[in-house]
Image 1 (cartoon, rainbow, N blue to C red):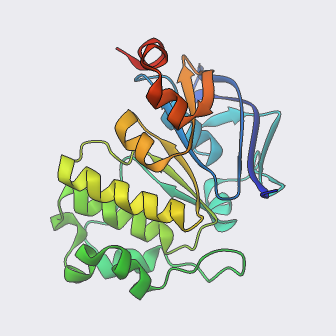
Image 2: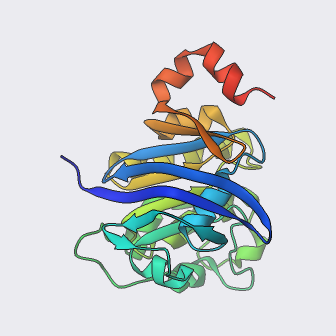
Image 3: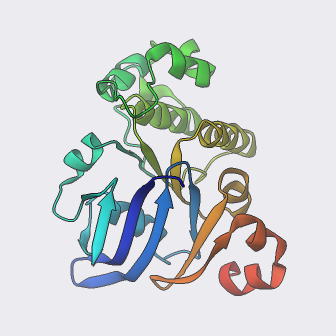
Length: 237
């Protein structure tokens, strides 16, 4: 049986006085790939940020590899091996590609895949070709590649991706989907907040669909993709 990596129970979160999430319960075992789906405003990104400790939150239980996250700040959660790819990308525009990757560098972990510079450039040859370019001069798709690579440079045990397909041209979207699928196939545990059902179906094996900050459905991506009535009920605008 795979090791349980992330456990979420009774997760409530929000911004200021506004509560967005209302008691979420789900878990990921080592090697799982799960998509958080839902309409705009359902709470997908808030779930990712709540796990990372970036918004006000409470939980009955919130654990990563058995360690409680509820009282930890984001930087300590990251040091445990939780990698976070933000929707806003947050690259350092005045630094070069190589310098951005170095900022994300963390020591190797005995229990996690190691991502030295060469391996990152093998994964993203585009970045190698522009390693001396300032990140602020890159396209949105190139910046998304850099953001994923910079997070991998921290040698994470689990990767949380917040809307990785947002605003990308179709050809770049396919490139990012192929990369995330490669990470999944190599056994990296993935939790992906995503608006695009097509993207999610390519990279995730399981899904949780949120509606008004609550879980409306949980199951396999294959089941959701094959059931048009279920998709219409949960995801149509």
